[in-house]
Image (cartoon, rainbow over all chains, first blue to last red; front, side):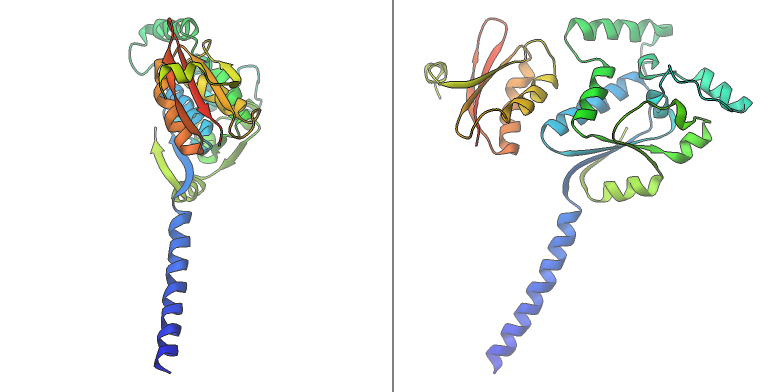
Amino acid sequence: METEQQIAELQKQIEGLQKKVKRLENTRQDQLSMAVVSGDMDKILAVMIISLAAAAMDTKVKLFFSFWALAALRDPKKKPKGKDFISKMFGMMLPKSKNNLKLSNMNMAGMGPAMIKSLMKKKNVMSLDEMFQQAAELGIEITVCEMSMDLMGFKKEEIIDYPHLRYAGATTFVSDAGESAMQWFV
Amino acid sequence: MTTEELKNLEVAKTVDARGTACPGPLLEVKKAIGSIDEDEVMEVLSADEGTKVDIPKWCNKQGHEYLGAVEEHGYFKIYLRKK
C-alpha cells in the first residue's frame, strides 16, 4: 500500500518535471532573433553575415527591422504615392536602399562606403544584394516594425520584395526572442 | 588523420569555394551536403583561413565527421564525412 502511494507520488513529480522541461526547451530553441535598429552599412553587413552563418548551421533566423534599419529595406525603384510633407522629407534625407547606407565610422561623405564596396568585391565578399538573395533562399525571416514605418512615413509600397517579410509589432519580436537561444540587439 | 591519409581519401564531391569569402564557403557546403550519401567524403577548397576553423564547428553542430585539413599554395583543402 505504501509502495503504491510512493509510486503515485513519484509519477506526479515526474509529470511536473516533464512539463517544466518542455517549457524550458521552448525558451532555448535553435533560433537567433535580432532586433535591428541601426541603419549603418557596417552594422547591416554584420547582421546579414551572422544571419547567413547561422542559417548555414540550420539555426532559424528571425530579424526584426525597426527605426533607422528600415532604410535598408527600401527599394529605390519603387515610388510610393500620397506621402505628406514630413514623410517626403524623411524619405529624401534617409538612404534610398541598402546600397546607399552610410558607415558608422569613416563615412567621409560617401567615400568610405564606396571604398568598402570596392574592397568587398576585390576580396570576394558577397554584396548586400547577394546576401539578401541568399537570406531569402535560406528562409531567413524579416519582420518590419509597423510603428516605425508609420513614424518615419515609409509606405509598404516602397519596401523591397522579399519572400519571408511581414509587418508586426514589438510584441512579435519579444515573443520570437523569448523562444530563441540567442537574442541580439544591433 | 595524417596529411597522407587525407590526400588518399576517396572524395565523393569537391566544393570549390575559393571564389567566395565568409560566410560563402559554409553556404556552399550546406547546399552541397545534400548531394552526397551518408559515409561519403566531401572536399572543400577555401582560400579563407576562417573556413578551416568554421567547418569543424559546423560538422559538430550538424553531426558530420570532420576529418582534417591540408594546406596548399594559397588555399586549404578541408575534408569531412557525411553522417
